[in-house]
Image (spheres, helix red, strand yellow):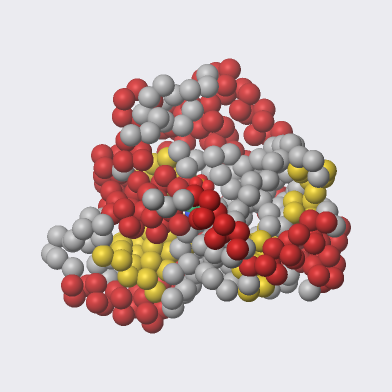
Amino acid sequence: MRDPDSELNELDQTGLRRQLRRIDSPQGVEITLTGSGKFLNFSSNDYLGLANHPANRESLKRNIDRYGTGSGASRLVCGSQSPHHELEEKLAALKNAEAALTFGSGFATATGAIPALCEKSDIVILDKLCHASLIDGARLSGAAMRVFPHNDLEKLSSHLSWATDKINADGRILVITESIFSMDGDRAPLKEICELVTPSPALLLVDEAHAFGVIGPQGRGLAAELGLEQQIDLQMGTFSKAAGLSGGYLCGSRNMIDLLVNKARSFIYSTAPPPSLVATISDCLDLIAGSEGDEMRSRLWTNIRAFDRESTSAIVPFIIGENEPALAASQSLQETGYLVPAIRYPTVPRGTARLRITFSAAHQPNQVSRLKQAIATIA
Ligand SMILES: *Cc1c(COP(=O)(O)O)cnc(C)c1O
């Protein structure tokens, strides 16, 4: 029998053992680590500073008084309350889609939706750097998987031709990418991807987890910025990042969404998210899509640009390579008061351990310039 001690030792020896950091404070740009005091946080996906924002807090308190705390059952039993339906209608309108479906998390969205859409005789084609939830969803589906090197349009095109030749008449091909990649912060060439996929028989799923709230008109994402919403069959995202709440979503045609209601196991066999939380997500969408959201995005982009003129997202990787030096860099930043964890395998490929720096609308410009100096010092 495999001994957990020896597995943990091996992780220790290769610099891959992970440990939880305990945070005493609410989320924010200043957080308190138990026993170590206050740090400036450059590691959160709370891009708009909404995770502890008065608007979300007041909304959630109000909605708890109105709807209570739990949903009681799964959506298909008696948990499908009006806040769920209102949120899905609002989201579909915002994303220019016919319909939308919400899940308990982004992870549950991917692992529910992909196996609902694809089965053994189908083909899933993914970018090499797709998030674990997308890969796990594809694996769970049992479909044949083809991976193309990151943003490699030629290889995507050849996988698509291969799949188009091979697929049965009633089979399905699903191409999956992210719009902003979570660990590199770069953008997918979405326009070119649409040009390849739209004329083919394949469906296209784009995960906007790190673009929603941050990029595009009203923070609607990269697809909206490029005018591609109509060409993307499935627009996926999460409320756990820029919205500062929790939950995942998928937008698509009415039929596609109805199919998910009938087949997505993480939707069917999981208790519906609390109606109070869901009603607050709706309120938060209004904020994100409105003038307050625009102001937040403007502050966020000022911060991003102050750190890195070239960056096209709120995520700036600082690639170091091996695990130990990446950990040491993170540690020395922590000693000077900055929280920027090292990201290692298996979250990123071996040999590309890095600091992953993320920005928030709530950072002060002088906090960003201080971080820049601190990183220049350790580099
Ligand atoms: C964070 C993330 C998810 C998962 O979303 P959660 O709501 O945190 O479960 C899915 N896809 C990508 C690209 C992500 O970065």
